[in-house]
Length: 473
Image (cartoon, rainbow, N blue to C red; front, top):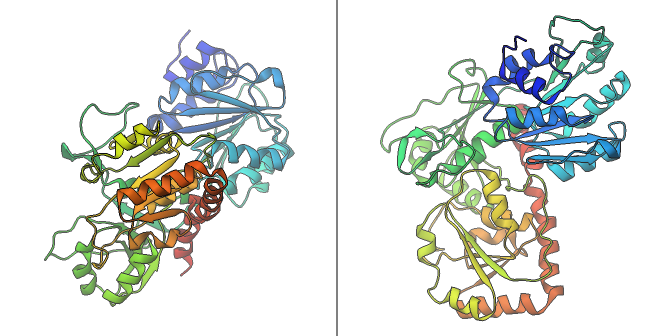
């Protein structure tokens, strides 16, 4: 039997009817559509599980993806390595929204192979599309009335591919959000040991090196994917709203800002202040209240504040009852040098562990760190609060999103997260506050509740809206 593409081979191997060797002519088209995204797709949802064959096909085709499936039949649920399934009904809004709360909204690919009824297909699509990220690819299979379904979904870009049909229902609809007019330019992240080589995650951490330009992942790649913006195009952006995230710039030189309207996302880089003074027409994006205050006093430019979104897209919550682990995370090894020498010793005397996370390469690495700790420590006594440091409270926000309080050496830039952290000025004071949290579960829970509530403002769902508002300014 002649099987010409890798996806069809996997479909045939596992026995899913999506391939023409078994029934439908879908997999050759899917391969052409998705082959360039094999490494980048991280999350796939399929509605309708049957035997679980297609879930296995997707898992093997996308090496870096977590695969989710839903079905209304308990016996159909299938779980395996990187495959998790749930009992949900595609015709119930409460089920679909609860699903998104469980698995997160950052889904790259959705396949509706459920009931095949057009009213169910329309309902599921209209329910899911507004609550998942903007560049999702949504595929509806076995559409008996494709023109009617596409008409009902006219608020989206709907493509009905021309397939070689064997059966009457051999029809697909590819549903995409209509692209907005926002372009984001962000230099790709790279390892400190190879700064000229863009970093590409290949399923496991590199043996050496630390990831730099993480802001390009968060403020660039993650936001662009979520809102459906163009990312680093070489053409077709000239009439767009252009956002430059810490663009390549040498002090003393000039920079060409393009687009219908230009924004510079300054992140933590004061090097751009002199450049911005030369370009008062460029709007500046700050990412914290502290930065906003500094920049509005320093620059003639208009400044808007779009905070950093936290890493916890799925809204995970800390579930352990005991407080046993303190953790510190930083992409800069310099921070760990300032952790007091006897911190670990005093934690050990209390029967507690200390976790350091100096290397992270994916959002999931950061999520895993926070899922492993009970209290975060930030210790940067070298920061002079009287200076105009461009800083943001992202670490506090990340911890808060899991319901985890932070104890930190006092910094002015943290004040917008008041109630989610405890400021201290010495190691002795740190342990006093730590012991109070450990000995009083109600006190810890009060902090956890405030953390969870406040961090919701920093969820990517809400931060994405601030970016989309730029298109209407």
